[in-house]
Image 1 (tube, rainbow, N blue to C red):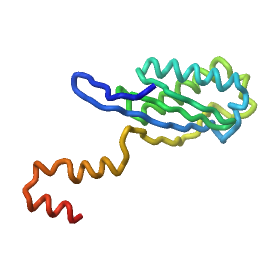
Image 2: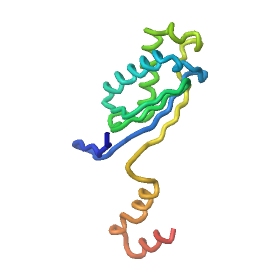
Image 3: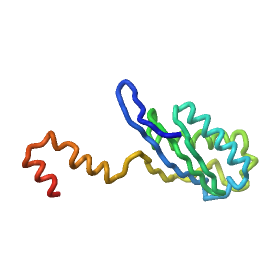
Image 4: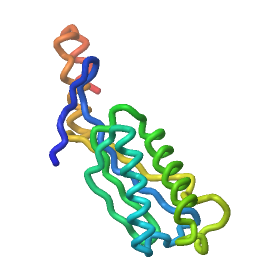
Length: 149
């Protein structure tokens, strides 16, 4: 699926993320395909509720990569909090016996995560736009000074 700019009554844009999550203690709970599939099902359920599209995912034995598109109604931090909280609670409630031998206590995920925003432009293009795209609003002297930087 191609990501596109989303238009609403007050905003236009896109917000796409690559997020990587790791189970607590970096344990290989996803080596069991059932655990991976069930975890993904709960994540998809939560994403539907949050109105977030998932474009891709990939499991390693001890980590999960997710690619989200059009994240408009929740922040990146809240997205991760919702994913971890809901999937952890539901997996422990319904399928704890599948992986309890690998984890201790009620902790299912590490505290940290990796996140990178993904867009249709490069950092250099945005930097150029910020430096040069607003020239029409500046005097000749201000434009000259900005280009010297």
